[in-house]
Length: 206
View 1 (spheres, rainbow, N blue to C red):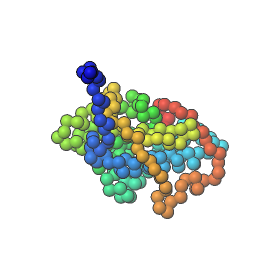
View 2: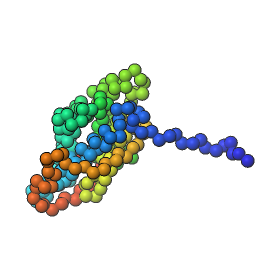
View 3: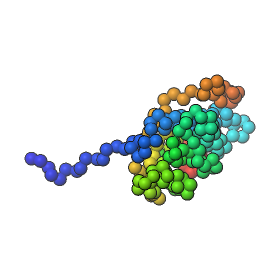
View 4: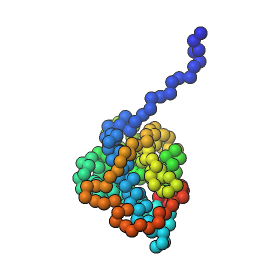
């Protein structure tokens, strides 16, 4: 006997490129690797004997990650990558689509993460053109870290509204992230200082 009261099937999983074709897998993976490289360089350069602590390393990791994206955009390495806002509110562009990044739990974004800059909202409306899908929408890359402070996962998020309704949750495949050709990793440019272990924290410490 057929059960007519059976629950409906869950909706199909959405991927970033279903929201906008510019958000292709290989592009988001390249951005995630740049973010991971910036944090890895910051950890490799940490010097607890000189006074580095989780706060200072977190600030450096955020700055280094921004620099990786900005340098890749300015060098023309990726013709689809750009920078919309180079300030502390850093917003980068994937073929005109604005994206921001943060360190923290992808499943529990903070109010700060859900705060949308006016220039970001305006650019998103331009990217979507005449479509209505941009209202209240924001794109984020969540950089999750382990107990040592190293990147464990990067997740692409499409969130909508002040409540942060999740419309896309997609772990980005990182693969291997070698340094750019001709450049040594930061750990090879420093002495062998003891590793600095970073506690897991939410909030402004990156």
